[in-house]
Image 1 (tube, rainbow, N blue to C red):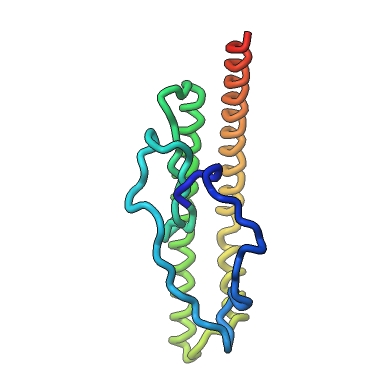
Image 2 (image 1 turned 90 degrees about the vertical axis):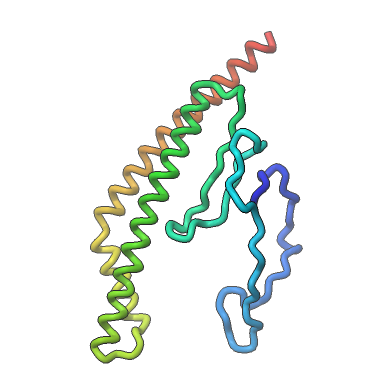
Length: 176
């Protein structure tokens, strides 16, 4: 995904050749094959790219990082929008990195405690109890995250609307 969406060729659904057992490994299905990693060796320079780049998922936060394009003609308002987006993405990545780390640590502890108590394998019902307990315990954190996320996105939307209005006014001024 190292090209902007405008540059991507259109792929129709009937062009996909997905095996019938792509969701889970089942008896009689071929094992999943390792695909070579395709992409850039390093982050591209935001000034030299022609559009936004979306990277592969981060190993800790599971979020895809963005490289935001900007040029020399960027206005103060457009710059503040771009910086606000970068700030919110960093905040979001930080939250999910800490959350996923806490989740995997608690999950490992839960499995380890069950194995120490003599159970050789943890059942799906026991894991669902763990998931529910984890969500219940972190309910307030998730609620505060959602409220903060909505407020930050509202700020981004208002800045984006102001940038679009500024562009429309500049375009109207050039035409007259």
